[in-house]
Image 1 (cartoon, rainbow, N blue to C red):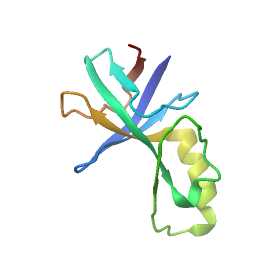
Image 2: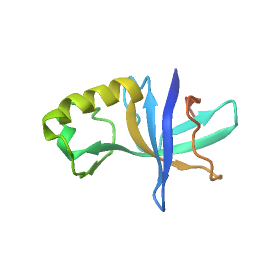
Image 3: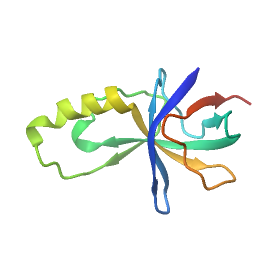
Length: 115
């Protein structure tokens, strides 16, 4: 199964926050994602969830979750915005590069590497 990166950005000292589309069964901690196009790998550290939206987003029991807190400008739209973000961007994960410093590219396809 191919997963598609929507967007990714560096979190200084933590890794890369990465939105991934087409996740069907969750990505457990330490799962290795591989880019065939660039021969690079990333390790899944955890799923990033936001405290105010945990009841409306897709969740998987096999994932390690990290809950964040954020101030929200329009609290009446929190749930609707979270659902739309998931539909448009996918699920958000914290990734660590394996033996490199590159982040996944927007639109890049990754596969789950099996050992």
